[in-house]
Amino acid sequence: MKIAVIGTGYVGLVTGTCLAESGNDVVCVDNNAQKVATLNAGGIPIYEPGLEELVKKNHRDGRLTFTTDLAKAVRAARIVFIAVGTPQSDEGDADLTAVWAVSNAIGDALRDVPPGPPGSRIVIVKSTVPVGTNRGVAERLNAKGAGHVDTASNPEFLKEGAAINDFMKPDRVVVGVRRPEVAEVLRELYNPFLRTERPFIVMSPESSEMTKYAANAMLATKISFINEMANLCDRVGADINDVRKGMGHDQRIGFQFLFPGPGYGGSCFPKDVQAIIAMGRHTNLPLKLMESVDLVNDDQKQVLGQKIRFHFQNDVKGKTFAIWGLAFKPQTDDIREAPALVLIDELLAAGAKLRVHDPEATANVRAIYGDKLTYCDGPYGAVEGADALVIVTEWKTFQNPDFEMMKKLLTTPLIFDGRNIYDTKVMQNLGYTYYAIGRGKKA
Ligand code: NAD
Image (cartoon, rainbow, N blue to C red):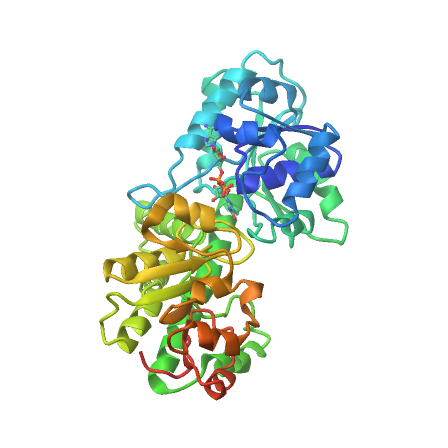
């Protein structure tokens, strides 16, 4: 099928690339000319494991191209995906400026295209959008004289860091349609990815839009829940790691997303929780649970800083900290809403010096902080001469360091572990003072 994907970010580029890989003819469109130029020159603007190889291969084979010319790409396509950003507005709602701009541009492009049978042209919203957005897209197309074009909702559930695998082997595909013919076209498109009997779930656009928010709200809730339990463990002398195991074996609970940490970040959970709260507000239904999830997360982003202040009795001026992990999670260079940024701001404001390391996200952090931080190529370089190590993101390369060597590099054997990646007893035996999250140490 001929496909246009509007918005070539984490979601759009992965969607376009995976659809090209399954044999479709895909044009990725972005209004960021520099991004398009980078892609056309064989570069990849983001880090996502496995993506570069697939982009290069499909680009070389001519199934995947990049352009800023939306009208041309849309006119040639049977299926148009909208995958632009929907960031948080000042009021907390999803900011739909880009979605509406793209909808109007698609309407302009398709005005003169003759109508065909149902499903012959479909505009699909893949961005995460509030309930009613699909209707709004259809209204805009109609107002532009392209009302004959079908619209659909098809939220994306991929995880950054595992995006290719998630797209190629989705747990499920959800589509929201008004006509069954549209669902059938989408079923055909997704068939190559659903071979292992993964469900293809058809519903209304409204339910489909809501499904994405409900799924992310649930995941964010699990994280805030376990973080709250961890903080209580610290105060009552229990170890959340044992508690987590004891809970998770209950099949009604399970283990997924029950890892305590320094709060969730990224481009999705924070803004999607805000957006669902806003949806409730607009319908006079205060979402008290979601508001609490959000508040707990804001507080959790302070927890590492609190532990550091506790240890240094509120005086970190002139102290040097090594920070391992800047991206909001491993396997990505994405630092949007990353807990590391909250910690960096706090420690800088308190007069500390910071030596930071991340395998992929350093360039993005440098773009914000410039020469306020010392950027280190490797984890050991960051630790050299530091008064403590703080682990914010659990990259695999941090799991098994040479602790004896680190003792020599640090001025004091002191670790604040925001991801609970080490064994408390082992750390004690090695002579480290070890703070983690919810492992029974008050701070
Ligand atoms: P992103 O910011 O990485 O990419 C958005 C892209 O859209 C950018 O390249 C931007 O230049 C482009 N764009 C903006 N306005 C445009 C316009 N008028 N015309 C053409 N291009 C335009 O965003 P993302 O992380 O890919 O997220 C996109 C959507 O998918 C969001 O709604 C997000 O909530 C949702 N989502 C994201 C993830 C994720 O893990 N990142 C997962 C699932 C869903």
